Every structure is written in structure tokens, then in C-alpha cells.
Length: 181
Length: 181
Image (cartoon, helix red, strand yellow):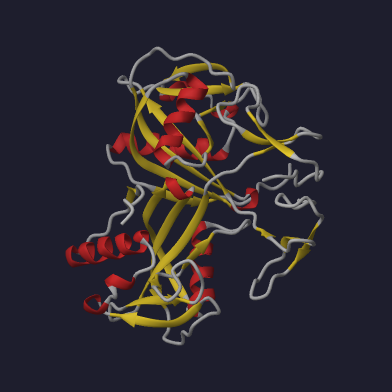
């Protein structure tokens, strides 16, 4: 942030009184502009036979890789509404949402990822504009080496492990950056 | 947002291609500036004898009312780190965090609130700059009519009900606006 969104004057990085961090502060109107983590919310859409709906990304980052339907939560919606909307947008798929299933802290990206278990309601799905293709995968066919995000991989691993036991538990996981290759 | 934080030119509300919402778009550099919900994260600090630490707010909104320690999650931290930091800042109190306990969707405020169960580690607490006083309350003494936020009230009610049963479960709640009085 170089300019004040309120008045257009230049901003400066300053530590406000009683604050512990430097903030973007307007040099004219003195408004403090905070920056905070974003929520990415998605679904695990499961068909009646146990197959999982994945989307192959038509956008960066991770163009061409597979993901659970997920995206940035919008103002004015609940987390569950965000998960259902993203599933509709990316896969033109309708779901009935079940419990919130996983939360990932991705602190180094200033993100929190949430995934809900969900029941896919019909087979009338198709790629949305952000997807190259959408496909139902059995566990044995999940493209583990072509998944777009670690939070998707972790959520799917957790889901399949617990499904075998027939017992699902909400989990919280902290991710740290991968070492450079 | 009236001006572009990147280049300082005026912004306009426009619906980008393939988007379903109007966004603040720069009229010069064409950068799309998204606005997303914020996370408010807090703790339920419980002392060994079962009393709960509450803070009386020294800031608006809800100046003078009681709250669990909580505040806006910052970039670069996990949800648990945010809860511990807020407890330290508002009550100069150290906690060992337990499970994530409640999630509130406050869609009409563009917020998601999270509260963790937590063990207060010592009695050396005191008001931080955002608190008028901090106090340990037994259940019978909780100032129910002077609580600052519905998410704090709900979390405390849920906590005391489940503590009687000795069985804690993570819960998700959607809040809708209160009717005007």
C-alpha cells in the first residue's frame, strides 16, 4: 500500500501509539490501514458412491493441477455459504454441506483455509470458468502428485483415513513453509 | 475505497469479467482491490479453580462492557498465536491453549469469530491498554447483562453448559442481525 484508499495521499509505515506493529498510515488524513489474514473456504463434495469431486485449475497459481473447490470468502457470507458458492462457481455443482472438517493455518501466506464435508446432490456438474475439468475420483485414483495445494492434500488424506474408521473429527493444522528444493 | 492503494488514482466500482460482484477497480492501473471478511480470535482463559478471565473494555465499540480477550488476527500468525497474543495484550495474561471451541459467522459484519479453550497459567494478570480492568469470574458471577459481544455470550453459555457434562465439542454458529429496538 503506497497511497491512502480514503484520500489518495501517500502512506508511510509507522507504528501507531499503543500498537505493536508498523501499519500503513496516511500522511495526510492519518487513517491507519490494517492488513489482516484472508479466509479460503472450500468443500469436500462426496457423491453417493464415495467418489470425490475435484477441479483442475484453469487459473494461476497451480494452473493445471487438481483441487477441492475452494476460494476466498466474500464479505456478507458465512463460511458454509462460501464453501457452497465456490463449489457452484468452480464445478457448477450443488452440495449439501455437513460439518466443518479441517482448518489450516497458513501463517506464512497470511491465510486460514477451511474445508467442509459435503454431499454432492446430483451429477449435473461441469467446469466453471476457473476450472479446466471436473471429475469424480475414487480414493485409489486421486491424483496425489498433481494436487494444487498442501491443504487440499492434507484434507483428503485426513478424510480417507477417517472414512475407513467411520468417524470424522474436525482438525486444526499449522503449516510451515516448505524448504526450497 | 476511493483511491487506488497501489498508484493513488481514483477507483470505480466495476464488475470484472467472470466475476459475480462489483469490486473497487483502479481507473488507471486497473488493479482489482478485493475486500474480504476478517477473523477475530480470542481465548476462554480458565484458572485452576474454574474461574474465567474477562476484560472490561477501555475502547470502543462497547466501552465499559466485559469480553473474553479477543481481537483481529494479524498477518503472519496462526489462529492459536492470535488468541494467545490477544490474551497477553488485553490482560497481560499467559495461557496454554487447548482446542478451538467455537466459530461464529457474523456475516452482516463481514467477520468470523473464533474462540479457543485455554488454561490460565498464573495469576499475574493486569489490564492491558485496551482494558479498564480484568477479573476472574465464577459462573454465578458472570456479568451476563454487561457482556460486550453476542459471540462472547454464546461462547460462555456453551462452555458452562458443556463443562457441567464434562464433554466439550467444537461448534459453529451463524448470527443474524438483531432487530432494532
